[in-house]
Image (spheres, helix red, strand yellow):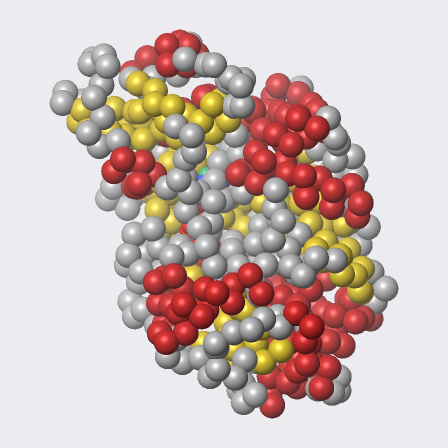
Length: 542
Ligand code: ADP
């Protein structure tokens, strides 16, 4: 017997329509590439999204067509999100930090028909233009006055096509499983793979991630997505903020500490989200300048492990609660968020100890850990194995890739992460399976070792990688960027591990570098570090 309730389809257009109706005067503020701060509200954004949908239709974009973007976080990118998905086409955000070859591969693999390009990325597209086989139209995301002199043929000006179009557009009723947006994983090994989200998965993800024990978003919040809109849809914030009616603040290309501090203070930002590297920059700036980030209450840190020293600095110096989160492109991306629950009346130290972990699954996400033979392992906080997930916001296969080896017959997706899950359901990532260090037949997790190094006052950034060793197969090598003016030494750092981990986990050696390599999504590029140090000469052999 079926229930007798209405069943309107979940749709992305409903998010902006509701924001217009209920929060029409709530602001969207953007730092622009052209220079000035732009401000308007949800009503204006909705009207311009409808104009853009008409303009796209006039350009020949049909339901299911892919529309690419190479753009920062800003109001025009936001309008593209809603115009493209709302009309039934697929918004394909491309990460401009990828190698140009990968950008071309991704745009061709997705068969993007129209490409929206921010001013800063016009040179990139000029260099690739001959190789973009499917792109029929390029739209530069600026006004007539700022249109660049370019050799790209027939480029269009964003403001011109929007202004010329009518704002009368009825969002079509779509089946909720209609594809809405497409993101590629960064593909550190092999070609990037496309994850194709639907209206349904996007709305469910927004509901789950906005909940009080996740991001706790409300119509009184001011949300600053520092995580780029080209990195897994800025972790869903361009959808969840209008869902609840939060004010949005977009940072454009200025992700340095001084620019972020200025925006947070000027706009009254209460909530933000980003990878650890951007927070390193912000915290260093706050230390040097003595400035504050007073309105800010909550910061989501994800994409890589949140270093405990960073969690502490946010709390003790700025009264900001860190929400440690874990997720993946394949999961829309939020999998877990770390908030306490009943029975956890925590002392500050107990709270820090909890926050090292990645948190509990948001509603809809199921998790388990398995051993080498795919057998379930106990969720006791001790046993560790490969993490598998499933749920309504997890991809079931990759875009145009045929059968996926990451999915098993029971519908579980293998994340490639090694993890523990404790009795309370809290997840702890030990490592990416390919980054685990194998020493004398045992595994050493690099994340714990990095977190300890980051707790030393002389360390700005740290990576631990396994390097070939004549006796132990691999041993951990600590690679460190010193903090400005710090003189910390190798021996001091090695001693710093005493009593904090088992003796055989302690890195055998330390190398100091000026900078660490990162992937296009801000993760440590460990493959390169392993390559750089594969011939490392151990100063002391065990
Ligand atoms: P990519 O496109 O590089 O795969 P994702 O954002 O999808 O980018 O990366 C997902 C991976 O990032 C996870 O599988 C995990 O290894 C890592 N990751 C994300 N959040 C955390 C976290 N809080 N702690 C440790 N690792 C994390």
